Image 1 (cartoon, rainbow, N blue to C red):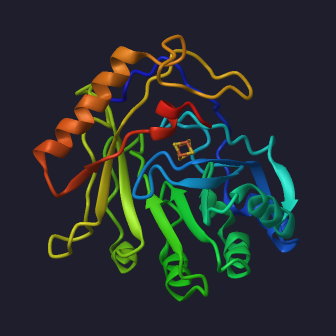
Image 2 (image 1 turned 60 degrees about the horizontal axis):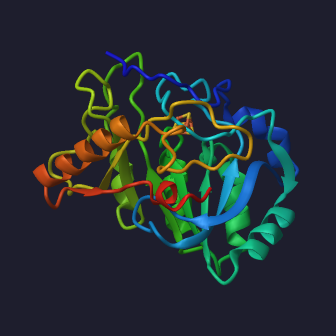
Length: 272
Ligand code: SF4
């Protein structure tokens, strides 16, 4: 059973690595936006950073995650040379060294990102990915990369056609020191997202660091440039959102030491 979601925000078509081939050959990225903010979720939550939001997603039609609230339209992306992207990031960092690379799906443009990070080993890079493209080759690249400050947050999605989470690939454990999982949950017992997914590939392997995050429920589509704010009940449904946050907290309390609660701090602060 799929969750009942009142509003689907920013639907797009599904994009593949091939859609970026020419850009990659020219050392270019397709970018949605670059902005200074705080990291809202996961192990570095609360830290000042710059977000590099890349355009396009391999689940752009959102059949697996209709609650996604980010804008990442492939055709609305800006083509930018890596030097220009890096210069804009440095200008906005304002003394911080943390760059959060998100999307859409940032691993669609891994090749160019990898080259860019090799030229910026003074900066720390955190990828937020759905994990579908975190294949063996990318794991090897990260483990051998000249930039030793690359971290990965995987937020796995439930395939709508499968109705349950995929198994965790065993090679993700090779990244255990730099990788964590984040599961979005909602209190609706019929939702595919009622419970978090697996935390390890095999029984004998230790669990990966795993965060559980309550789903924020939107009442309407965001207007261009509008910043979401949890205190604005014309935008976010406070009753359903509070219930989802409470559900996430109870999952953590029922499994102390296995899960960690992650709230969307940026929504509380009213920043992008
Ligand atoms: S994979 Fe992530 S960015 Fe893409 S639609 Fe789903 S939640 Fe949004």
